[in-house]
Image (cartoon, rainbow, N blue to C red; front, side, top):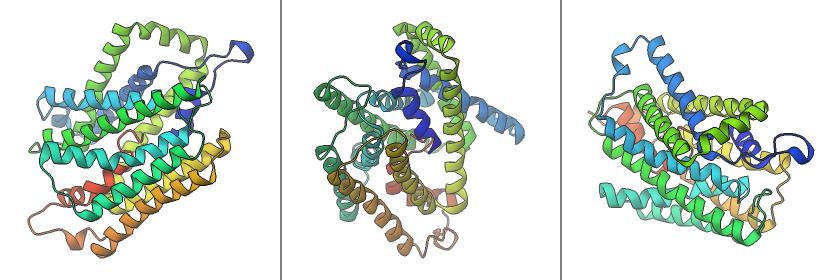
Amino acid sequence: MLYGVLQERIMTMPFGEGASGEVFKYSLFLVLCNRLTTCAVAIVMLLYDGKYSEIKPVAPIWTYFAVSLSNVVATTCQYEALKYVSFPVQTLGKCAKMLPVMIWGIIMMHKKYKAADWGLALMITMGCTTFLLTGEVKSKVSESLWHSSVYGMALMLGYLGFDGFTSTFQDRLFKGYNMTTYNQMLYTTLCSSILSAMGLFTSGQLPLAFSFVSRHPDALSSMMMLSLAATIGALFISYTIKTFGALVFATIMTTRQFLSILLSCVLFAHPLSGGQWAGSFMVFGSLYYQGFAKKDKHGHGSKENHTPKGESHRDAEKGQGDILTPLLTKADPK
């Protein structure tokens, strides 16, 4: 939840006092800070565990760059959207990623999904639509209601499309490579850092971003805290899935998203209409239903008792999370 609060603080609230206050505008710089921090932590963890051989890339470098490119675009869309739509809209909209992930899975990996999965995706999409149509959605820093709503929604659609593509593309590219979490984290974030830096340099935003943080050191402090929160979140995700399984992780993350919306409404005074609350309960109710349905199906979430012969626990968890995990914020706790 700290990640969500800091994200909204950085992108929507002015730094500085009075008329001299400035709103941070350089989303790609925030992505760069985030990825550099995660990359550094991955190196430290590999060295700490003595896994020096895993510092070398396991898969071809181009595969890391391919995944990183779509991830950078998705994350930039996510941050940029906060300039035009409120945090509750952004957070609830991210829950709708199930549908694009399923579509990309069909296109790229020829996956098949059950009718129940399509029904769940439809219910979540309906909940998000209800939320958008029954109350205010624009960010406090946007000037035009119509312009902000349309452009903000376009950015969220971009986020959903690219994030769903990232998940599916990552699954496809890295299949067959025996890589650890830290190895994948190291090289995807390293490549993301390079791409972000190139984007900032070519657009001329890099010196402007440095100038902003030099004028407002508290902005840099908030960015560092955000980056640490994102990195700790990524490690937490990996540990939780490995130790407790994808179902427990899904329940925790769904609860976190709902509480983040409540906290944002309190701290940043976002009024929600009755229809928006109904849409929220429709979305999170569907997610909880899916989690408990999976739990009952797999015998109260026990990973150990339901791993097919010849299948590793990691593979079993991956199978369990095919539908649940794309709904949630992962490595970046987006």
